[in-house]
Image (tube, rainbow, N blue to C red; front, side, top):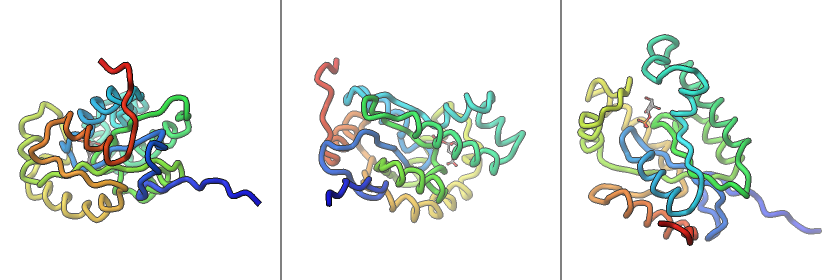
Length: 195
Ligand code: S3P
């Protein structure tokens, strides 16, 4: 009897070079989108930003969704958007996916990723650093309006983030260094025609 290789869950690193998609997780302003873009360029993979897909699916911005429909609706939309995206992935079109900061805290999202065999990479930084980055960025984040709530949410979510296959400390590193570290630790192959 032949046994088929089983898909690895999002908490298990894939065998070196075998990943055909990677998902970046972590708290708000942890660099998921900027590292995701750099990484996709280095690998020659397609980049997908889940927040952008939620906005396109809903036809409105994230602050609008929170204001007009509430957080529960936003979380539902995140699950829908990820489920649709995972169905679109194929081995011939490998992908880097950046999730919003709260997505991986949802058990259904972790289940979808595990089922699809997509490893999660946690970009970590101290909450003071993340708060300062949020203040300095032009992005309107409905859950980054109060520093105490921000810190509380950060503490609550860490137990979920620890389920990622890979944990990268980003403090003091630039985007390219983080992407390089990720490629090295997951044993991925760089795109040869990268400019
Ligand atoms: C959220 C993070 C945001 C966005 C939404 C909710 C969160 O994404 O999904 O505002 O719950 O942490 P970023 O992590 O890209 O800021």
